[in-house]
Length: 315
Length: 315
Image (cartoon, rainbow over all chains, first blue to last red):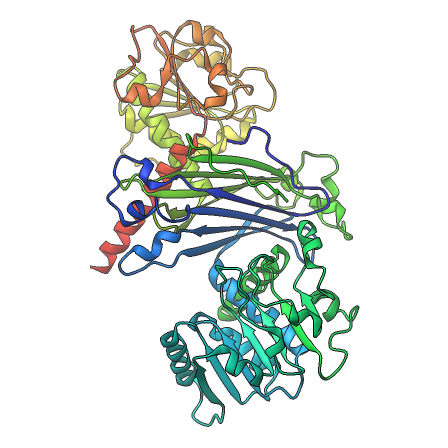
């Protein structure tokens, strides 16, 4: 129990705390699957992230609760290892407003940021989209296609080949009959990466071996990195940075020095304070980092949309 | 932002953190009522309380989020100054289970603990119940009447006389026509306190002047203190302790030394490890302190009751 609770820092409005949860093996009964595997895997964690803005046009306070239970995969059937809930309050009154599914919010958030970055950075003539990741990322396909309706070929790569096949099947099923978009999957990433105008990397790194080799990218390609959220879990090698312009979602104060390779933030880019692509051949890059500010913006959007729909239903 | 997140202490399963929220006056627009009064009142706060048990029969993790906005009373109409939400997760999988109204849970919790303590400590022959507090505490009347069905007179005292009247009206309206219970309100606490077999003090102290004077209590009376949650905000004077046996809901590790006047905890009393009343004339006392363990127990009860009712509705 913390005897000296830390106040909100005066110049920031958010706090992030991670807790290692007590292990089930410390209880008297250890018969569950989680208890049995807890000695061999990473600890279960609870992460609390609070964010508060008091501007009357954005009067929200959020508490984001994320649980990570690595041993969930040992259950039969497996249970997702990560869960997230966001509680939203009015920041001028403290009144509770909503409890939102944080996982869905994260999907919305990633789609919005990737779509915006794609619109600002990728070549308007882009036709081929390569997705590195699995079937949880269909919303990212929609985001890039919304930014670049010229996309007419979508290639899926996943180290687990059957997952790539499943994802392509899922995308095909969603496609209207009149569509002329070609869907494909690849067994070798290095062979197809040079074909793509937009490469969306939605994979989580567990090692520090980069997924994307910069020298293989097509001239003018846009690279969208939305997977791993820390700088250490690099999704691409340093060659990418030497070939053009890289932007990051937002730079956290204590991580700023790590992001020396970035030209600026998405906010600076969208606000016209930074130039994006300088030449047709520039490789552009966008890196999502999971900032609390955008978490709250998307929660606001979901909440206010829900309220508008509810009011509409009542009329 | 905390750079070194504290882990859950190994010997405890709960963490309590209080944050001072950023003031609305720091934003560019200061037209709201809250902003105007924020300079003269206490700061707005967010309190986070997490509790985790991993026993398979009690596999719950809770995050309790409480907002306190003292300036809410300046809104027209006034907004309650305190709000609370509890998010419940499965502690063996991290799966989100429910988002519960923490204020309702607090009422349930107080009723359950007060009723149990009354059952264990008050005289079985108790007939007169005195309630010190306002109309938010009707559930406490029910709790004491459930423990002692012999109660046939209920007196309400509130420093704000009209609130006492309103509460009595509310209680009368709820009473079945066949009831022979007499309801009354008092203008002077010291004049009526000696009549009561059970005194339930549900008032929040803002000064350190005790509400209940121990020497005025009837011999054999039971005193139920459920208002102020810290030891400093004393609801009764020290004379109470010299007249009998006092029990506390639970003793927090870092507050143990403050509770030297207590004979034991409610858990020890209910488990038969401590004797309650020793003589007919003993004054008994129960002090609720808002422990995280009981917070989680009542959340479990509400959640499991809801699940049972939902399953029943489906059959």
